[in-house]
Length: 428
Image (cartoon, rainbow, N blue to C red; front, side, top):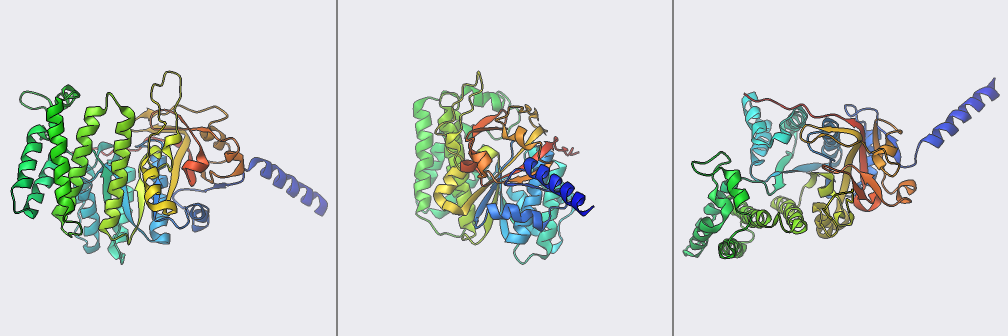
């Protein structure tokens, strides 16, 4: 009997070992993500100053719930206090103001509704609300509150303009005011003061009609913005909110103007412009808190990747070549070295409230396909020999699959076998 028991146990063990892959750890549930399970992830991102938590696409419930589970552990277990979101840098300040009011109990449900409405539609969902509610509750009793900021260029152009206008108080001479006036007259983005249709020309139509700007107008705009940046740099170290946001607004305005002008003729350059500015904004938020806080960066997998320049989506008919495209994470590695770590969120069957259903990758060289046999929720070491041996793998991208080399681009993969579309919130 004992021999039979031993034989059966050995058979089960051998069978399981043949099935289980090294470097793959099963998570029972996102709701009860235990410290024991988290240690597998923690080991892969050890000594991180900034952790990029990616996702194949925005608005997918499994990914949003997974990153909330990860954020909770990073905050409680490892002392992270800064959340940086792929969203407009100033608009997101409404969220931060709300979270900072949680400690004194002054927030109301009406305040919370306004906060969520301030975010881009892809973030106005139940899953993001649950994350913010948890952070709010944490901040009520925390010695150091969690701060929440945006790092993307998609700020309303008129907001950038108003923030820069406030910087005039730093200059006694009229030089800055003159440059500001030139920018206001020549920067096409600053001509827009609403996304609603204007009296004569809808804002979006205006943008589309100005891809080809007169070179003189465009150069005056960029020259004025650049000269204002130079003048503000003379005030390095100033602890003033108007100065801080004017500096960000000038940088973002310059990139936004160039980005829109180049988008149809130099896609590679504009992709670099956007990820470069995202990395710049990350460093500015870190500097604002004197680099005392560890940060979580929330963005697409392609942005948090540590070396995006090696990715070449070569699907038939795909005209875009991603070689030499820098990611936000690649910039941060150059700045922080091993202090930057990256986690990809991916899955087998993925639906997004923004992008609809993703293509199911059934190729044997698609890591999403291979992992779906190993469990519903997994923590994966991308440097495991069986993964690294193959080299290139397919993984879900934002709108289409892409080749990648896991061990070079990510420190960990958090895998959700099935991630359904997030539940959008409908505001009155």
